[in-house]
Length: 613
Image (tube, rainbow, N blue to C red; front, side, top):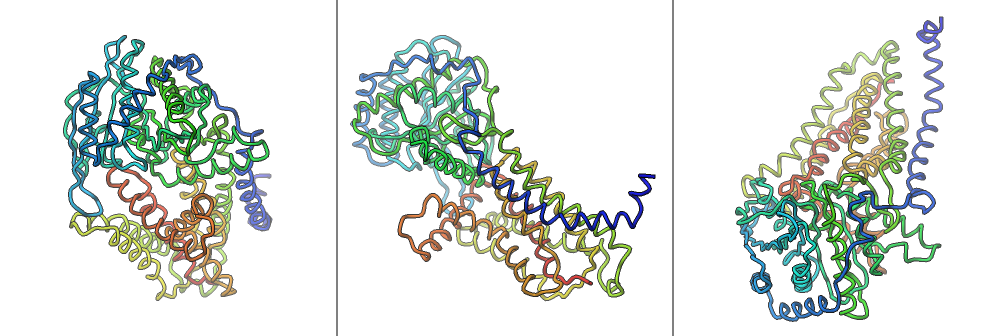
């Protein structure tokens, strides 16, 4: 009897009416809870303390013998290299100094075909190996320095690497080879070297083969010194597509930095451990939001990203600020780097115990995936509830069609045509730049022009057609969009949580209210405006503007300057994402063009149509 009562059409209508009455309020409540819960997570009473999970690392017991003699060597190298200007002359000087230390150095030539046009870029990498004293060199650690493409003067970084190598050479406790790597041409340099090291090919990046190789690379660090007189050590962990190294590699650095009284920063944000307790939550929230924004872009935050992409745990460190004493600060930095490499030297196997998906809060706090996934689940419950409503109401509508519904296209035909239009627009967005690239006609300006032209053309194509659509057709169309999109975003959260969360937070409510035109024209205008805001271009501009306003906008900037900076950063970000897609196989460009654009185009086309009453 109970099953029969549930199948009774009259009872089903009553239950559906109750569900529709509470669905909007429940959706808004879930959305507010999803956002509020995430904002609570950075609080010290909520986020857990970090810890070193791999017992073999033992950073607290790492031998740190680097002293004033090592600092004097670095200062001497810095004085010697400062007389050389130009990347090639600096590279030759580093090669001579490495030879004087007794290190056998080798060069690697490579060439890059710029995806956005221009002449072929030629580059040279230099690498030398400090062999292990206590093993056969089956494993290796990398110390990387960029001689070109960084934000700081490369002389200080090169001098530090040479001075550190001189000190490391005097130690007999190394059980892993240490590879000194000096690269040029920005991100292309380390990418070319690691591709040759691992035997990976890339048609746009053609490196020469390496003269010698060491063992399996266990860990790597990219060092960039803006000055030998510094105040903070800025740490970056994000690689391509939001990938991160094992958290133990960061935790080990935290331990040795604290023991040497070195203050860390994370992607430019200060560590709350050194702030008054009243400012702790605010700084933790800024650090988390900064990490969220940077991870969502999918771009690497340092040159270590070339290693992280191939499952090699790596981080970038960069000095910032201005300290009091060059020699004392160099000693502290040298001891910190020595302690980190000594910890990595203790490893008996690859790092695997700690987290690979986490958000850094401070030097002693973090958010694991088990902590930050519930807010996303609450946000994604909003489109799932909407999908249930569309399915049940659309099914009920099949038996209650009005006389005018016969003039509208059948559900299958309507859904097929709208999806075909959306998918075709996305496919054209994805392939058009590649076609221009094959014709050597692609540049920054043409990339922007072709993408905007295709997107605007796809959005305006449905305008001349006045389509009347039945309730069953548009509801089933919306169901066919919402359910796969919510599932995809939840799956995406495992690969790049920040991107999944920000997209969900942006589209959850506008997608819920989107429907064909009926009733008030003002309400429909609001719906269309909301959809324009969450379009691929709108979301990108919103993200760039929000990040600029929160973290990078100069004080006293007006609205006009803010708009100019936002548009400039948007254009630069678009070029960087496409370059990363071509050279580093980043999938953000494919996600935007082949997934998000078709979904948005389906919603936009449906909202332009008129619903049959």
